[in-house]
Length: 150
Image 1 (cartoon, one colour):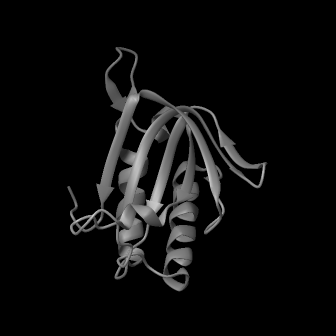
Image 2 (image 1 turned 90 degrees about the vertical axis):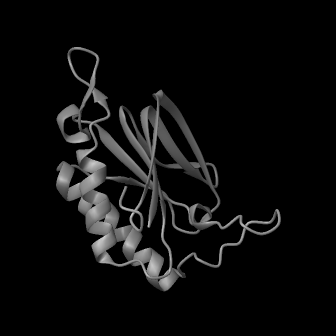
């Protein structure tokens, strides 16, 4: 699984002109699920998401997690994170997991983040044409791949 995590002052996802979810200060997380991903990947990524110390403390140093900061999370599925661009100029999405694997893992990620935060995680609509808006705070953007464990 791959995540793109952005610290935001606000973010929202809209489908067919209707805002499905919106948050204030917190994290906007794009979630890509690949073939071979499992609940172990979800668990590891949830731990990283809620523990990343990317929020400022009282001294202006990034030393607080989303839990410490009391922020919100908006998680949006995005199969294009699995793109391979090795050959040619047209990305290949052959590594993207199908709905039967990707939906349950995305849902598990959202549920486990909600449990860790003690508040509901905002969500997009899996497979929909979504319009995502955000104000990246910092900017702070972190990419995490459960296969690399960096």
